Image (cartoon, rainbow, N blue to C red; front, side, top):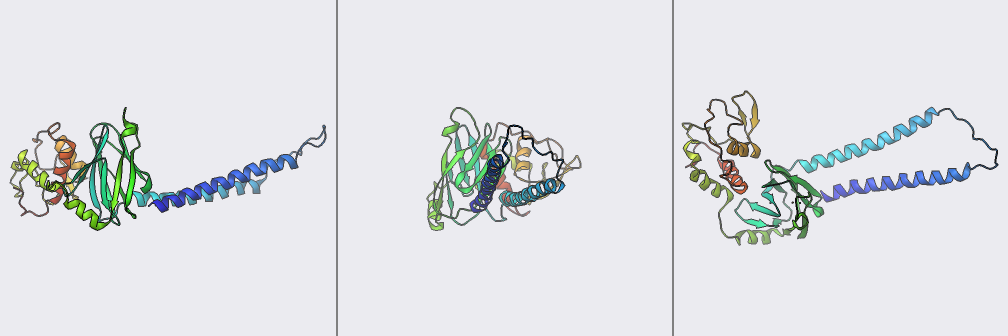
Length: 301
Ligand code: CUA
């Protein structure tokens, strides 16, 4: 993505330099050419010039349309991750970055990723607004409490790259930095297997799911008091209010913290809130567990 952003940026820069020189040059040249030559000289009176007006309206219009279409295409490419991505969860808090890999590895202020694979960051904040910024990858996005935002990038060169917080978030905002370590695929595999062996996020989520007794109501056999969660992720859910929502990360998060906000049609608003009982990281584990619930026959305990 960096090359595409740079091309647009340098085109803009070139355009700006060209018109700055052209306008400044014309001002200078005309000031000399049309200078007052005798004390009683009076300028010619000109009433409009239709061709001139049209020309200097149409040309800028075309230039700005080029910028608009070009900029929009880069924006769309940046905001639409490919279907297959390596997902990493990011939790920002005053004043550190916490990264969670699906295999269970956790990192603070350091993110290891393999070269040549699209990586998607699914990000949220525990407190205030932060902003993930990796200048070398030309990606930057706000990290907001209470919702999930995404960015994606595909590292093309192994190395270590700066990671910044780009939203003023308190006293030690300027210290909320880190690094992205891009590794060769083999090194990355070694790094992954060298983890503490904590088990995957989904496995942690599964344990939490039974520890919190979610499984007593959300049963896979449709006999529970809560909706079946198997095959839920990514599907459209019909609500008691008649609305329809897509079951994405944000929906699952909200259903855990504020269960009465969206009641699935056919169910009673009986679920208690888990606000304050689960941390942002545990929410991610639960979400990741729900994502893995594929068939009606899986062992949902
Ligand atoms: Cu976090 Cu600035």
